[in-house]
Length: 190
Image 1 (cartoon, one colour):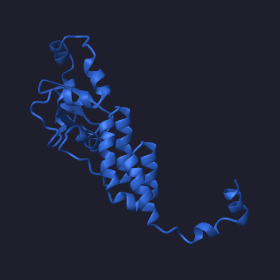
Image 2 (image 1 turned 90 degrees about the vertical axis):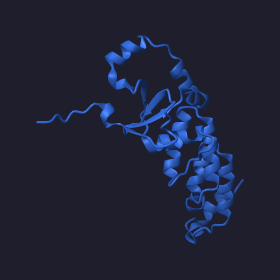
Image 3 (image 1 turned 180 degrees about the vertical axis):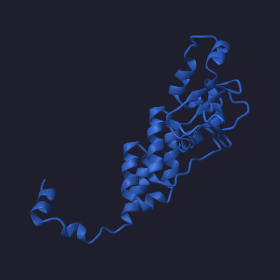
Image 4 (image 1 turned 45 degrees about the horizontal axis):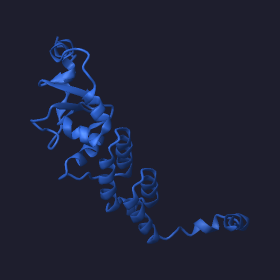
């Protein structure tokens, strides 16, 4: 009977371009087992968290670590497992390549990526997402949520674009009728 146990290396798939750099010197592995082969120098420039991670001294020699823990290595490169899925890492890591731009299909996806950018202190990723979201049709579709996300993450371009977008919308008729006169007076009393 064939074994159903497979090693993590066999289960992992490779991320597409630009995350398949043959010159890469580290592999970032997503929670859904997708490997991003990248240059440590790019990650270090993009994130002080990654820089600190790569500056940590190895407690055991590299050759000994490879023999003892082969699942932490692939093709001679160290594997850094992260808790984020490949979709989030793709959106997070695209901005470290100057010719790439993240794209979002939902505000939830954008918010999750911004939270991870905050976690890894990747200000450039946040700025790239601000530029992208500010011109995205998502801000017309979900104006209030987009504005809240923009304010939460200090995305000035998106906040302004969303505020402008909100001016083109009409409030539902029941909005004002749901308030009683005393509540309205209380709200306007200063």
